[in-house]
Image (cartoon, rainbow, N blue to C red):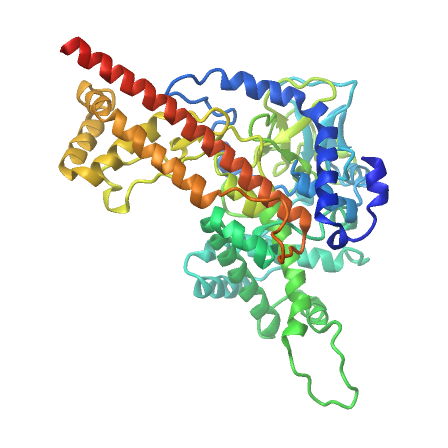
Length: 560
């Protein structure tokens, strides 16, 4: 690995795809030792799925807490992100010292760790362990960036909200994130200013300078992602367009109040690099002039929409320095965020004190706590939520969540019949590892089949379900149509395999080029990984069909 790393020093666009593929293979081999424990756990879980209507309980159960703290940390275990950092080194080593100076409290043995490929996360040292519910990191309130920052005037907030709503109905819901983008731009502008209360440079310098999210895709990459994750891609486009229009108009309209000097600074970005003749009395704004400001705002969009959390009450979007360093793992998440609503009664807090031991207990602090006992040398993971939505991770965070044990079944209730068949979408899942089908997917498959064949019978099934989902009538109808349901689901799975996830090469086809071979390779691996998962679903259904036909034949023989 290190021989290749030292040899591949040319820009990524110049690395041949064949060499890149070899490079990736060696990287994967170098990571297998660390992944052994996870792989063993995955195999053990698969053994628990042996028949239909059974599926593993998600290792990360959906809960109100998970939803409220739906983390969007940019750090990920994706190979694409790891390789990207080889070019774009992030200044991490001094971050922990800066954090301690600013009042962040670390439990003993908690460190920012380098995985050896340039990407960072949080882990335990080899000499320390902690028990469940231990606060391993506490970030004081003065270090948390919030959309409620009072430097953005109320009238400016209202102005931006109106623009966002006009740009795309419903997008004003993300006004909080857009306001947080403004705060990030403002802090980035004044990071080194003497008047700043906090020098944010050590944290800002650790942020990625580019992101692998849907917004960054080139046309070739986008054509593939649109096939695999159209809804998430369209939604992100709307988020971006609404935020961009709002910020652009705020900058252009001098009647809208901004902090002193902030607009002038943003305008310098807008006009940076524009060749102007001294004798020219007027300046014409061109698309090229807009691009520099647009790139700056795109960076802020990436920071906020990949790293921010909504506050527990939902009233603010927040960025939590150091809390955003936790990597994601759907299966092995062992950390959760906890919002301190009140001052800790066990400690006396002196507001004038610079002792970081006191700051950790202030109301408004965020504590990262352990969900379970953690042994020495263990990595610390956070769940970013919605682990059964791999397309969301691809578009919103720019990586393939290989740790997910479940995925969306891509099966919905027709809108016209939604009231007759209410269902929690989180229950409509299949196993990525064994192809197992959840109970709700089986039930909905019967209902969908009957809707296509006999609406009256479908209504009877819905009525039986609404009265008592475990009633003899409901179960008898499910058993009666189990073979059609299996065939319906099998056709559904094969359609997804053929249309959504066709076999895809890791390198672009001849005559085509990607702006980032690494990113294209990640997209291809995601495509092929999802294809394999759906092939396991189809294979599982084949066994179910054989089993159901054999049972039906046995019943007929007994009756005849």
